[in-house]
Amino acid sequence: MQETEADFLQIYDRRDYLSPLVTVDAAIFTFHNGELFVLLTKRSEHPEKDKWALPGGFVDETKDTSIEDTVQRKLKEKTGIEAPYVEQLQTVGNNIRDTRGWSVTVIYTALVAFQDCQSYVENISEASWILYSEAISMDVAFDHREIMQAARERLKQKALYSMIPAYALPEEFTLPELQACLEVLIDKPIQKKSFRRRIEQANLVEEVGQRPASGKGRPSTSYKLKANAKGFNFIRNLEA
Amino acid sequence: MQETEADFLQIYDRRDYLSPLVTVDAAIFTFHNGELFVLLTKRSEHPEKDKWALPGGFVDETKDTSIEDTVQRKLKEKTGIEAPYVEQLQTVGNNIRDTRGWSVTVIYTALVAFQDCQSYVENISEASWILYSEAISMDVAFDHREIMQAARERLKQKALYSMIPAYALPEEFTLPELQACLEVLIDKPIQKKSFRRRIEQANLVEEVGQRPASGKGRPSTSYKLKANAKGFNFIRNLEA
Image (cartoon, rainbow over all chains, first blue to last red; front, side, top):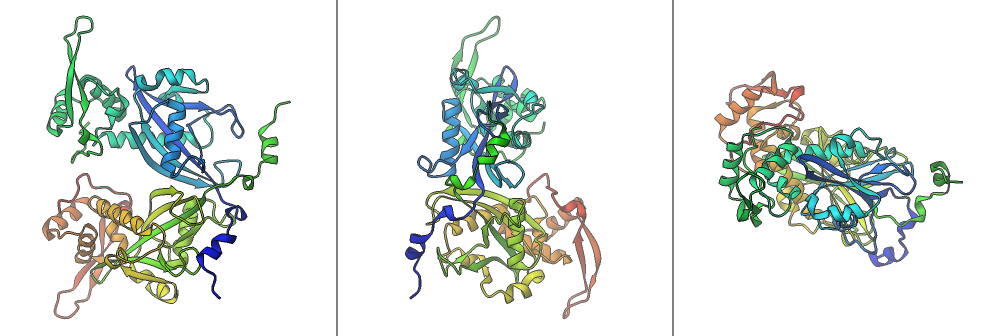
């Protein structure tokens, strides 16, 4: 008699096979005081104990139904919030990246507003916003420097044709704030006039009110993203 | 005394932890007789036994130093050749896609020339080129229909701004062949004139000779890709 799939599954046990370690790692960026920051956490356990690393960890089969659950759980543990922008970047798997053995990590890029999670982050002793320019010269754990660089490059490319810079800002922002965040992500200044025209033509933001003048300046208009901004791609890259 | 990393690794055993299954899967496409084909293999083992599936399988820690090794090994097993174009598409991981349990698969898209591997594929009883339009209405294994569709969509987008259609053709090809392959990948006709101008301006192909006339036609010029064509992206998408 032929073995059925049910027969097969009854005797099948994943523990009988050696399988690579599976983790998720997230490069979480934000924009604060005109600069780009990345969230790092200090490792409390071996391997690479006491080094700074990207937040991440193992799939927890009792909690996660998918790797998206795993990354959202890890993001929430470290920032206290649901990240408004999370994207899978790439997967790296090899036999040298982790001293525990063959290891596969699914890497995500995320953007959050500094103001939305700073009080939470401040209270987690092992997590900290680090200036990106400093983070890439630190002796971070595993291959996390290369991962940070790949994630930062993806954000740079994507900022040229999407509204993702807004996800590194609070829900309500001014156009000068959006332009400053975009300039940091693409690492180049842009002309105010062409930036404004691009935003107006795409019709992706709506006015939510006036922010009182600070100091001698005029009051400024604040905006939020429209629902259709998520996933919107400009046909042409911004010419920076 | 504090435990060192060496102490930790001495007692660490991956087998003590339940880890998701890790596989790679490859959606391998080719262009033949004016149509798009995908390579499927018939599963000989449970689960999903006897169903058609994308080629793939487990990391073999004795053979593979990276997941790229795994996918190249699987590609070579099924096609007999090194694929000239292989790209990581995305990773899918969840607790429902495989009856054996929590499963993570790293998905690749590849293009090969039909002529380069057909004699090999014909001799593997369990592998076959299936018309893509038929494959997506077959009852394939696991979530492989969705994976095929995502891979096909990526190729369509990428064909609009790169030279990847050439990788589904033999090393030497004519411009009408390249145009026909591009049109199948983007699923739209294009104007010969704008296609030719685009190829000429990009300077990515070089003449390798004349192919004798077949029937009443004139002899045709054959070309191959220049080295700089790999990884080249046009600034503007083809307007199809």
